[in-house]
Length: 322
Image 1 (cartoon, rainbow, N blue to C red):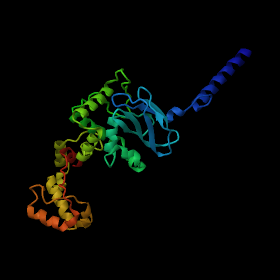
Image 2 (image 1 turned 90 degrees about the vertical axis):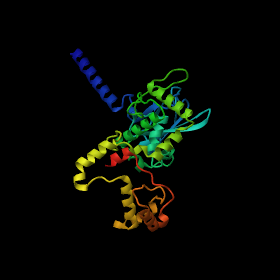
Image 3 (image 1 turned 90 degrees about the horizontal axis):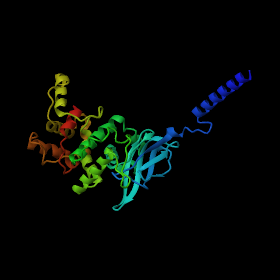
Image 4 (image 1 turned 180 degrees about the vertical axis):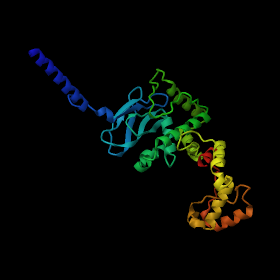
C-alpha cells in the first residue's frame, strides 16, 4: 500500500513539474519566443557592433555583437515589425547596416540585407527606414514584396560580377557563419566577401549600388505577387491571349505616355490636377510622338513640366504591369 502511495505521489510530482515547465514556472522561462538573434557581418564578422531595433511600438535595449558577429536581443517589450541597425567602426570610419524583423527568430544584418531595406524604402535609402521609421510603411513589406526585392538585389549583385549561387532564398532569416578573425566563414559569408571586393574594384560604395538600384527602379523588375523575375515576352503573350479580345492590341509605352500627357493637358476626367506632378520635356520624346503634338501639349502644361526626360520603363517592369 505504501509502495502504491509513493508511486502515485511520484507520478503527481512529475505531472506538476511538467505543467510548471510548460507554463514557464518551476524556474523555467518562455522568453525564447520573444528573442531575435542573428549574425552581423560584412564578410568579416562585426565584433563589438551596437545593434538597435526600432519597432512599431515600445523600445528594446541596445546589444553588442560578439566576436563571431552574433547578437541576441529580447523583444518582449516591443511590437513588431522592426527595423534593425548595427553601428560599427573600421579603418574607414563609422558605418551602419540595416535589416528587417517581421517576426522573432533569426535576423541577419549584412550589406545584402541593407540593400534589401534600401529597395523596400520609398526613398531608396536604408537608413531612412530607421531614422524616419514609419510603422504603416513597414507593415507594407509583405513576404512577397520582400522576396521580390531579394531577387532584384541578387540580380544587381550578379551585374557587378558577384556569384549569388550560394546565397539562400531568404538572406535575412537564413542562418550562416561569418569570418571571425582568421577563421573562414561559410559560402553565404563568402558572397559578402566577393561583394566587397567587386565594389572596391569598381570604386563604388554600398550606397552607390543602392542608389543605382533605386534610380533604375530594379525593385519593379520582378512580380510583386510571385517574387519571381518578370518576362516581357510572356507578359505580351498573356495580354494577347487574355486581354486583347476586349481591350484591343497593346500599344507601345511611347504611345501610352503620349495619351496620358494629352489627357492631362485636355483635362480629360479631371486629370489636369496632375499637371504639377508631370515630368516631361520637348526634347528627347520618342519619335512616335509628333513634334507639333509635343509642343502643343507642353505649352498647355506650362510650368508643370520640368527639364527631365521621362525614363522608359524596363521591359520586365512592363511585363509585370500587363
